[in-house]
Amino acid sequence: MNIYFSGIGGVGIGPLAQIAQDAGHTVIGSDREDSLMIAALRRRGITVTINQDGSFLQQSHQATPIDWFIYTSALPDDHPELVLARQLGIKTAKRDELLAHIIKEKGLKLIAVAGTHGKTTTTGMIVWLAKYFGLPVSYSVGTTLTWGPSGHYAPDSEYFVYECDEFDRNFLHFNPYISLVTSVEYDHPDTYPTADDYYAAFRQFADQSTLLVTWRELQHVFNELNSVTYLDETSARLTLHGEHNRRNASLILAAIEKLGLPAKYAADGLNKFPGTNRRFEKLANNLYTDYGHTPTEIAATLQMARELSDNVVLVYQPHQNIRQHEIRNQYTDEIFKDAETVYWLPTYLSRENPKLPILTPGELSESLANIQIADLDDNLWQYIQAARDAGKLVLCMGAGTIDGWIRDKL
Image 1 (tube, one colour):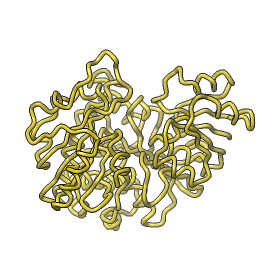
Image 2 (image 1 turned 90 degrees about the vertical axis):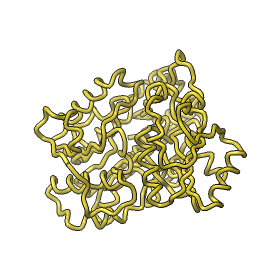
Image 3 (image 1 turned 180 degrees about the vertical axis):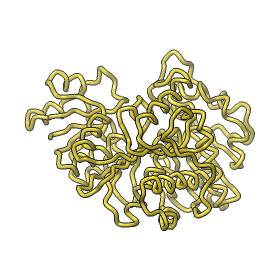
C-alpha cells in the first residue's frame, strides 16, 4: 500500500510510519515543523514535507495513488490535508486502525502497555529486554530511542509490543493478548469529561485483554474482572534508578511469567536498561530532560533525580491550560519536595478550550515554596548554567517546547 501520514513527526504517528515501512508499505508524510522523529524518518529514506496546505498530498496522489491517509488525533476536522484526502476519495483513518490492520495481517499477539504514567518507559523496557536476549520483536514506542527505531516490524516475531495510549480512547481499538497497566489517575479531561469516564475506559480496556497485570492498589478499578494478576511489591532483584522504574520493571517480570517465558535472567537485562529519549535523558553534565507533565510524574522523576544528586533544580513547563485547570490543586510542596528550586514557566498551550482563562505561572504556583517565575530566555539559561557549574543536577521537564529549547542552547 501507499500510505500518507499527516502529523508524521508525532510520537504516535512516527513509529507507525516506521512499522508500515518495515511491513513492506510505501510511506510519505507531512508535519508542521521538524523534530527528532522526522530526522529519524528521513534517515530511513522516508520523504517528509514541512508543509500541510495540501499541495504535497495532491502532487503525491497524482504521481502514485495513495491508498490510506493516516492522521493524528490532534488534526482538526477542517485541516486542509484531511479535507483534500476526503475529496480525493482516499481512505482516511487514525493510527489505531492501521496498526490493528498490520497486527492482524501479520498474525501477531499484542502485548499492550497502558496507564496514566510510565507507558513509554515500560514499553521501551520490554523492547530492550527482547533485543538484549536477541529475540525478534515488533513494537511501537512513543518516543525516539538511542538504541533502535521507535517503531519496527520484525517478520519472524510472535509478539507486537505497543504503548497503548488512552488519549482519544485509542487503546479501546485493541484486544491485547496481555496488558500491563502501570497506573490509573484521572487525566485527559478533553477526552474524558469525568474521572468515572476515565476509569470506565480502563475497565473496558482490561475486559478486552485476555490477561492483565497491574498493581494491587488498582484493584478498585478492575475488581469485577477475573483475568487480572495483582502485584503487591516491587521485585528485590531490580536495581534500576527510580522507584517508578523499579515498579514498572516488576510488572514486566510478572508478565513474562504469565506468558510462560523464562524470567530467570530477565532482571539482569532490565537492570541494564539504558532508558528512552525524553525520559530522564541525560543531555550533558548535570543536565537532564524529561517529558513528564503531571504532579505524579514530577514527584516520581524528582525522586529518581535525588538518587543521583542531593541538589536538584527543576525547570518546569506545564502542559495544556485545560489540564492545569484540572490539576492546579495537586501542585503541593510535597510534590516538589526533592527540588531545592523550581523555575516555573508559562503553560505550553495545545488543544485548548477557548472559554477557559489562561492560568498564569503565579496562579499555578501561588501556594508553593522555592518557586522562581521564569521564561525560556537567556536569563533562564544563565541560571541553568550557574546551577550546573555549582554541581547541581538540573532537570528540564515538560511536554511542550522546553526540550527543543534546551537542545538548541546546547
